[in-house]
Image 1: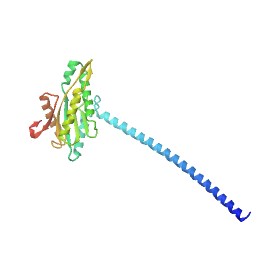
Image 2 (image 1 turned 180 degrees about the horizontal axis):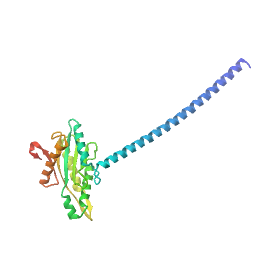
Image 3 (image 1 turned 60 degrees about the vertical axis):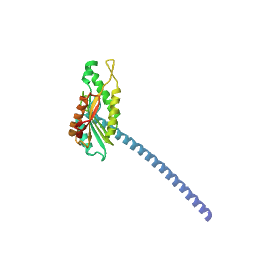
Image 4 (image 1 turned 135 degrees about the vertical axis):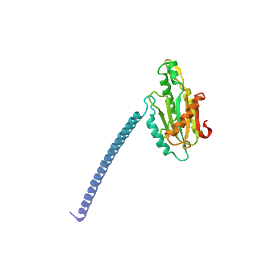
Amino acid sequence: MTLREGRKRMKRSFLLGLFFVSMLCIAMSLYLCRQTAALQVQNQELQNEIAAAQESLEKSIEKRQNVPATNLMMLDPFMKQVDHDLAVQKPGKVAAFIALDGDHIGKANLIYGAGTGTAIVKALAQCLKESFPDKENDILCNVGPGSDEFYLLLKNRDSSAEIKQQVQAFMEKFRAAEVTSHGVKVKGTCSAGIVLAPAEGTEFLTLYKKADKALYHAKENGRDRFAFYAQEKGCCI
C-alpha cells in the first residue's frame, strides 16, 4: 500500500466516522426533542389538573359561603369582605354601600300563590349579577336563605354620578323582569338606600346604619326608588 492510498483510506475512515458521529448526534437530538415535548405535555396536564382542583376548591368555598337560592354571598363573609376591601380602597376612588329590599314580596305570595316571592327574589338576584358583574369590584350579598334583603358594595368608582347611573340601570332592568308563577306573569320592584365611602365611613356597621336610614327614606316616599344618605342634607336625598 502506497502512502497516497493510506492517506485516502484514512480520509475515508475519518469521513465515515464523522458521518456516524453526526448521525448519532442527530438521533440524540431527536430523542431529546421528543423527551422535551413529552415533558411539556406532562407539565401542561399537571397545570390543568392544578387549575381544575383550584376551581373546584373555589366553588366549594363559594357554595359554603353563598345563599343556595340566589348564589350570592351570605351576610357574615360579606361583612368581613366590606371591612377588608374598604381598608385597601384605591386613592381618589368612591365606593357605595347599598341596602336593598324587595317591595311587598310577602303580598306577592298571598296574591299569586306560594313560591311567587321566591321567584321574584331570584329574578332580583339575577338582575343584580347582570348589572354588577365585576366580581373584583362588585360584592353582592343576600342576607340569608328565604330573605329578600340584599347588600351591595360597589368599589373603585370615579364618582357618585357613576354609581347613581348604574343603580338606575339596575332598577330599570328589574322593573322589566318578569317571572311566571301559577300561570301568571308577575313583576317586582325594589327600594334601596345608598351611602358613599370613605366620605361616610369605612366599616360595615357604620355604613349599614346609614344605608338603612336611606333605605327607609326611599320606602316612606313610595318605594320603587333609591335614596342617598347625606349627613349635611339632614339624612337623605
